[in-house]
Image (cartoon, rainbow, N blue to C red; front, side, top):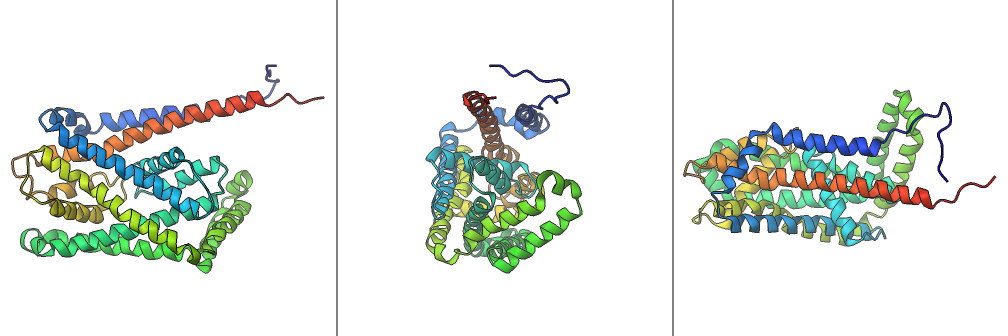
Length: 357
């Protein structure tokens, strides 16, 4: 039986469709206003496609690690995600990290999607912060090893980038300490008190979202994980050990770009080390995907490697495969997931029996 809208009843705003439209428009504008995005296709026609396909394959395995590590850490909390849910949450986290300043959007959006699946925000946030902690540990460890491996060559050929590398190691190392500290109850309680103090000064937040109550619930859910943090050492160690090859895979894409340009003389380990140092040097930049800093950094770190007047072309190809392609794939996934979820909610609404008098 169809439901008619009574007089004076507000028309429901189709937020999901608005969200889909904004996402599509944002991605289209993202491409139109970036010159390197448009030129990359002409550059691809002159490269060896087989090596680029290998680079895409490496990226896919990197995504596979992301989803499986999330599932591993969720299981430590007795939350069992399906393989495809883990992969979806993993890719969505990467996508939102790439399009938000300083990669701040990944974990909050993952928690929002998990909340949609009835997983409490405090629990999912705790698990996702552990995931981030594990990856940061791997990031710092591999970058530190790369720094000592490349230090003699850097001192001889490119000493100007050493302070940026050291700064990046200090900032990322500090983030490891900070996120570990969040799992201490006094630190967590202090952060939640600060959040409540802020919301008390914004009455609309309290009125609309019951912010004080929501923060208390979040703290309780988060604490249920952090209280048992020490007993989860095995899963955390496995998370760090799994994050090391994952980070190496992410940093390896550039090697296949090297091969596609015809370079064969530089070793894989050197390319991997330089890419790791580039990443640690720009990861703290406050632009979405460290845009601008990544391109400038690539030109600085790899100027002695692309010596056939092809450095700018290399920047375009590398950025396309490590950033733009991920943004496009993530946007498609967001749109598809929103359409699927809207249809699911509609089916559930239609299945609800009408209220009896």
